[in-house]
Length: 283
Image 1: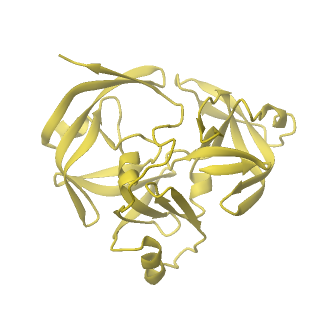
Image 2: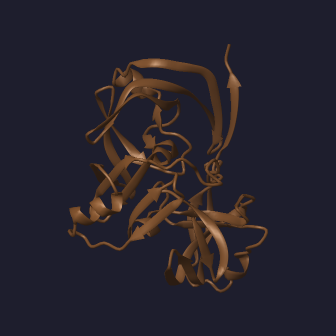
Image 3: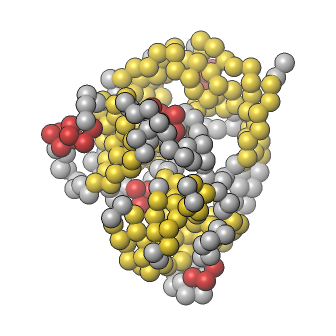
């Protein structure tokens, strides 16, 4: 998402899997100069090697996005530098729930649009939602689980819950679900991905399940990444890229419909730098 920080153009990833707005220095944006001016001190964060470290909480004069201006915004400055960019904008970090949960957020990835709506608790207007969604849509409740949003779903009829994380490249579920919930697989790819994150590696395969049901919408023969060493499922970017999605955290609702767009934005395959991936073929 394009933003301006103190009127300087930049971009942020967006994810309900993070709590604050986290930033890193980039070649064109240096946040270190705000450290000495900060009045909010430090917080503890975990780095990619799962070690606790201090991160400075900095204050910027103005944080702007989509016509909104937030004065004296609070950002968490992580160590290291961001080297990613999209269409000339440095991708300096990621915006989490402290930012996203103040709005109803419409994700229309194929048509390159993110729209923020100011809504009030308890003011659910179905006529307005129909206008926003622009077609027949599905509805499902969302729940706040330890400051992370999750939705109930069914995989081949078995009840599960997915956290909402559009920064994740693909919808994924723990390998343990297959045995514990007796989830049958239609197909499991031989190609294995090895991901190194939080100081350890874990492996995953892309599998095809009989069906994935969210609300009253069912997709047959749905591909899902199956991974070891994870303990929760997540609804990833593949879902958002294929749907128009409205998330109203204030009223605990998610609305979605199939997208009729045909393109995806530059940067579609970029994600926040918390892990490294490698793909191998297992014979």
